[in-house]
Image 1: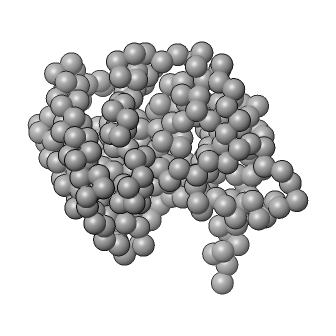
Image 2 (image 1 turned 60 degrees about the vertical axis):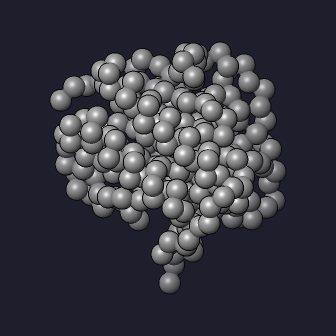
Length: 274
């Protein structure tokens, strides 16, 4: 099993992402949504994007690498190398006409991301990362300077993290809140200097696939608050598995956010009591 993708596969993957991103831009603002059993939204564009990506990945890898996707099979594939796909992260934004969503495609080897593609169709931006080799934005390699030199005072949180503010209402939150509704972009915003921290209460593996590697490559510390996605096993069902996480631009910033992130977990534990 090749450890890294070859140049032909990378070219084909970029063509596949171009196809999906263009369809999403065309559908944006002109498509209705349905409600899935878990209460989240889905559109015909989600379904088309998922099928197109899954079929394309299997073609590119000669059907030798499994695919785990939000709208398809949600079990960890049995192949040594497999793909984790979120065809449209931010469906609520997409359906509401808010131009902020992403396509996430990551290749895992031995349960951890080895390469990642994160496309932001509305901005025509694509982030590409390779383990131990770096991160590129639209072909330009990113370095640590942008993150280090950022003066952002913003912290991204998800809507399910809001109860932490109530639990710690007598304390001042250490930054300006941003709730953008796209887990992958919330996390990656830390890596590229848009924010200095992010807290996600219930991200699924497909929310994390690409962002996880991008954060690692740009040396952003990550703290898994419950389960560690690095411990997922072949055949494991992940449809209901969440991986609460906090990340920051530095270890010092992470320490600042940890008490707040812990309040998220405490709230989840309390809400699950009989």
